[in-house]
Length: 565
Image (cartoon, rainbow, N blue to C red):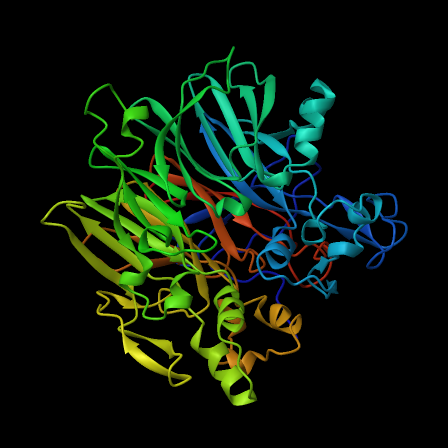
């Protein structure tokens, strides 16, 4: 049973905003300790009617037949131009991850969400469409005017520009990254056929400029502006699994899709940060890693001041890996499933965290070391669960390099194939502040880091609310096998943590989804002076009834006002 509270957490946001495109008042709520204020600026509205797995979608909403569904789940890419916010969305992302990463292709429907996979109308009408992406819907591009509270759906302008632009939007998995420089807004995301689609807008006129498909790349996660240049981290191949790098934008309004390669890496670049005159990149692993360089890690660029200003093609081979997951994780197979997460420069240190797709390590371990007995299978499930670890380093790449584990474990389970047993193995590290996951074993993503007002903020994904639904999709799993203590509904929802200084441990700003416990993560953050704009991840696509005692699903855009502002 789900809790009967409509809203939980440090901020109660009680109403759903009006329809898209209209001017609406923001909904404000103050945190319980009166320290932070959270304001709900915009929220996804229902966009489909669902009448059963494999059945045609009735007209609506409103839905005379079936129930309302909200497919747009994530504010996936977010960028700020003056007082305006541009963002791109991702639809039904939980279904896409379960299908493409966990190979869960059996349709599922529960009170929170539906994933149809091969039974979706998209696949039924186009048999060549991948079943694991059957729940994909074209992403949306939104412009939010903070001065007026008006949000504008710019997606129609893309479709109206040309058939090619419309087709690129239709085949984009989601708009995973957004950035802007010199009056151009770029939004990008992975597309079908393991390629990358980019869309450009004029920031001044708000006019759509065009789109492009880059077949040589398969993923994008972040844009970064540093020293008057814009960079983007990319991956090559399916989900970036065969390599990656960093591109520098050298375009303009007239030519918005001009880039040059400034990093060639054996892994895809995940998040980017400007640190100590260089660019740091966290990375996701190769699909079949065979060396530490192909694991999740942290890479550091040459100095931007060397040679020509910024990073240039001659810097592409000059990046250095300064940390990788195997330096911490004792189990070889589990280490290969780590992802690199949010990264930020704060107080002379580079901070970063790890990411762990729920049950991915379990699935991979089962493939590498299949177990025969129930007892061995249960031990494997319990031994492969990981929560985020949070790190910081300084003097990176130098003989004086220093790295500290802030939140993590002194020992982790590791499998010995020679004896077919699990044992607790020291990691070689002692956390400075606390256990993995900010002391919560269900915090599985360090999704984003941002510095605002002299504070470092860390947004996480917390899968506590959906763990029972995910486990229910696998008949070989039980919640008890995961090794977690009974889950308290009071901890449902993604977390936002704050480091007040380099001398202090992190403090919780919200541990319950920033006012909506169905928000299982803080996907992206943009500073605004001492404050932040938060883009939330919420894939509960069947939670659309504003009259029941459960909050609504779908993305949310939230303003965080810090104390004293």
